[in-house]
Image (cartoon, rainbow, N blue to C red; front, side, top):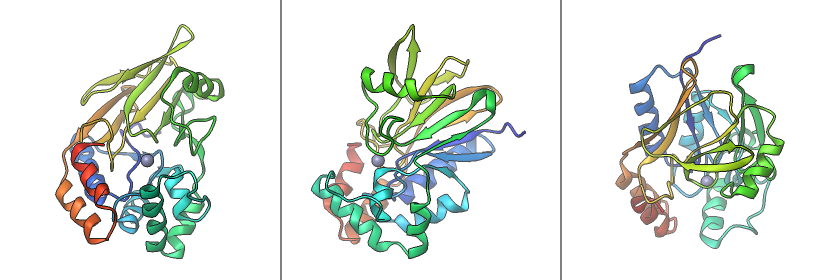
Length: 250
Ligand code: ZN
């Protein structure tokens, strides 16, 4: 079985400039064997079709996020704020029936990787795959109770971190650019942050490079052409705040 590195991306949110910058960065560091994506391929930014095309071309392993479910018509927008709702519905209108079908077929949870170091991929949490923000001890404990693989990867909060099971009590460790964790069979939850719309004050696109053979996962942040992505959002007639927030990582 191949042991080449895997790029873990999340919350792409139709930001083609950010996705391409991340893929370019990862390919500069290693020969990428696979791409895993923990959902929200579309939403917020201006290029849903192009981002779906890129993800399909990479044959990326994906789970569905809440924005993907809205864009393909499987979920309503009653729990979205008005700006997110308008953007999510706009995404669906841009997609072809084939693209919507592709999104609709994505699973909410899936397992990947070698059996002795398998990962569970889910957008929110195992307790509420499309909705829960896994950001506190109680949510982490409930998720770990349902996690049957050594490791899991979540997205949704657009924050880069890991959760360690420390003598029973989950401990959150915020990730910084270039920080790593050894996958040493202790159970972990990883979050790659957001590739297309970071919300931790750092506007650079986020992802994880997972070196299977070395059993190490490293968080990265990558500069990209934010102005180009903003221009696309404004030209598409989407809410200007969706462009502004990219520059401040909010
Ligand atoms: Zn998201």
